[in-house]
Image (tube, rainbow, N blue to C red):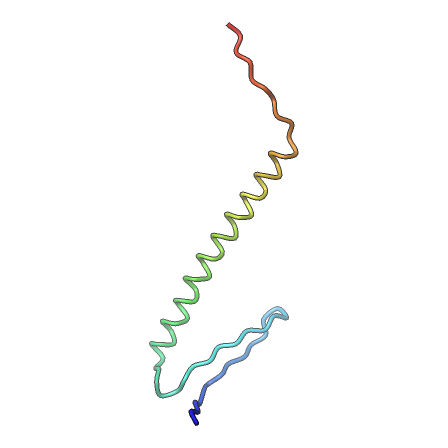
Amino acid sequence: MNQRILCHFEMAVNEKYYQFSFQPGVVNFDDLDNALEAFKAELAILKEKALAAEAEAAQKKAQEESPEVAAEVVA
């Protein structure tokens, strides 16, 4: 039977629950710091994508609500 010992951290921030686990003896503090930095980088990418999607949705909604005006060229 394979068994692992994990260090498991749990934290509630603003009534939201977060967890982080790692295997002791396999990683050191530098590894943990690098992993947390990688998570931060991924979160930044996800945040950018969410903001872009939100802006695109707002733009589409604005286009649907505003009546289209036909442009005429007068010579």
